[in-house]
Length: 289
Ligand code: NAD
Image 1: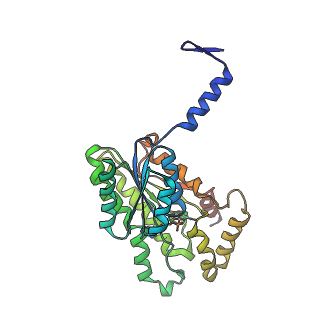
Image 2: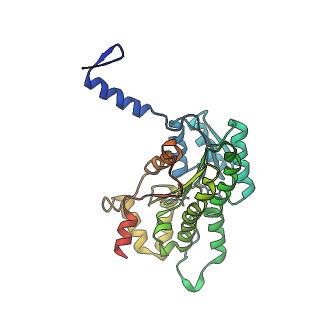
Image 3: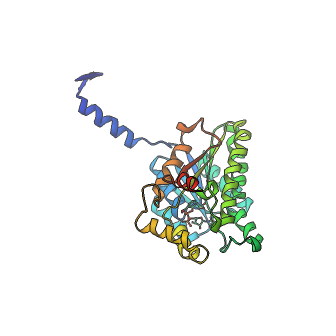
């Protein structure tokens, strides 16, 4: 038995109270976040996890009806705004909305993305228009997010940007070549902008998910079958049975925990990094090459 204050507490009670403190901990209490691509998949799961951790979240997307219904499911701490991330003015407006609604912005999660056109793997017919589009939605918004989030965060010298990259940005996938380039660019933007942001007391980091069970990934499996039956089959097996512990499909919730960490004050000295959440897939693929 140990005495805490005037109360006598057994070891079992102590253990229980430690666990309940941890599970009730609101790691983002009082923070305000904008999450792009929040109508679906990883962004939607991240919005739910941020709110569970005490944040207020503005969901930004282009699927109005879906995003509105997600926001109303998530309750009073969620709001929706239409934001096409390819348009800098709309990214700026999402930032300004956070300040108008809540007086501050602590986290901008640049998460929206598209897979790009298929086929992409023929060197003799590189689709430059397709490349421009995938860069406009996947890569350029990382810089727009940094620029406009920093505009409102810098005066308070606190806040961070989180960018969703991809395992394909770490180990390129030839069948998704333009997508891989766009995601490698996101990782490069994060590394390049960490120091300029640090001068304002701000941070930026990336998360690179492996294959994650979302509408985007599930839709890619039949599309990929045309150009890469091997990759398509591997993804299908990962979804249906899980090939091994290192080669398995993740759930969106597996990615959200990295986002909560990066958004929280626990990560206050983490800047310019890329957290790869892929059950070891990229290491496994790197070792194969
Ligand atoms: P998803 O399709 O479920 O969600 C993507 C969301 O982005 C959708 O709600 C869509 O409406 C939105 N979006 C698309 N274009 C937009 C635009 N121009 N402006 C604003 N919103 C837009 O897909 P997801 O798998 O949850 O993808 C989220 C992020 O994770 C993407 O950046 C994706 O590249 C990345 N990612 C996904 C996987 C995976 O296996 N699912 C793996 C690695 C990286």
